[in-house]
Length: 215
Image 1: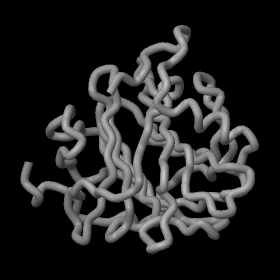
Image 2: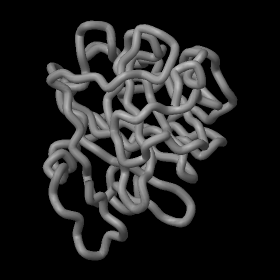
Image 3: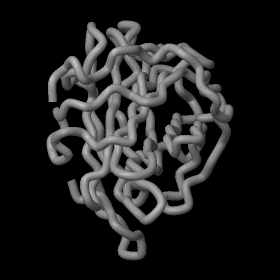
Image 4: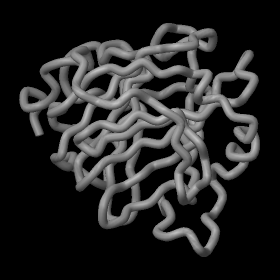
């Protein structure tokens, strides 16, 4: 897929969507400050109760169908740390991205990592969900919300079209069909159970959970 067919705009305009609010995922039991859009896109954050010096968070991202969902941890698109994810059969493919230009963002590398939480990662008949521990993901270089932020603006983007190479985390993606920014109240994302939830990252899903992430 040529870059000329890809992103042309940035994560800038606001679209009709609900305000982030606490939500507990029925499968994982993790409570997020959670934003959902009418397209089916959603993104949620969970943080420790004491966030002083913390650089980690737990996130959930998902959508409907076979298209991709993305979030900007810095609000806009250019020069910010992005997370893109999409379903591939019963698995989820995800990667960090970053770009200086409007177009399909390239994979970004650094000390930041994603580790799936299997009990909160699945594909079913209505939607797909990827829940993961994002380690060393709250940076001080202005590519993400800052450790001291209390109400940062995060960007969202979604497209119903599947990436050109669904199995490849570095696949190019088509321009978003819906995008915007939303303010998250990080106080509502804090939870005393964060340390326990964090230990679930990378561990096998319990038997009763359906369709765990196998990637």
